[in-house]
Image (tube, rainbow, N blue to C red; front, top):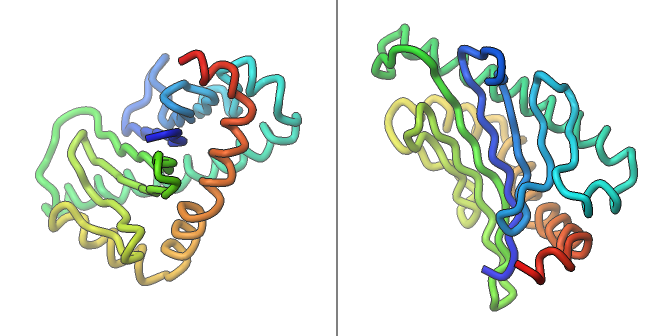
Length: 185
């Protein structure tokens, strides 16, 4: 992998001080470069080169995007907990988590690998196969989510466009911003 851009998000069922209900971190080549959580209600830079290189409006846009994911992921976590009460997912005492990783890798041959994967309570739940444009359910409980996301048509087309185009453009732009730091790595 020549360069990578990915975002890791987690939503929890029982937030407490220091453990926000939702958090997302952006990583460029493994370096955390931005962070959002629902306690701060703001996407913030995590590196000097992101703080210095992007326009102030960038942080407003990223905050809106992250708040959209906050609402979506919390709603999905609540749906999954509802499936537990219906007996469709085995019960799990205590805290429940929905994890998501989404991003793209620029490979040394110039090709791009885009991905989105979701986990529930630390186990694989559902992933997106960019080649086929379909979601892959890791087990039966994820079939409901797969059908819902594929049936709306919007989820697949937006995700495919992001992974094939937007992610690559953003990756290249951010590599330019952090080139000096990344070359020292």
